Picture (cartoon, rainbow, N blue to C red):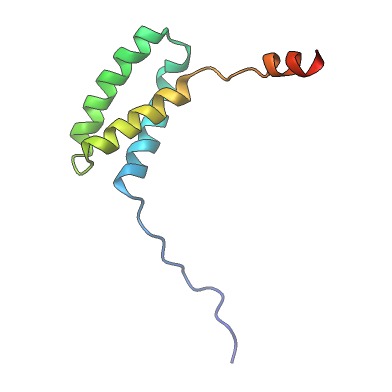
Length: 90
């Protein structure tokens, strides 16, 4: 008997939270939020979270809070390692 390596593997559908997170990241990339001022980012997140709340009604308020925190963290500039390097050189 030969092995059938051509079997299709079942792929689970993504969870609503994962879909909402991915959609939010796509919006961040397309809308230029990364280059916006902090107050404009906050306005953008207010509007976007309202949209995501309507679109993903099955998510809990805690999940929306976590989703926003993830998005805001993603929009922050990277932290430099310069202060740590200066301390080790001294």
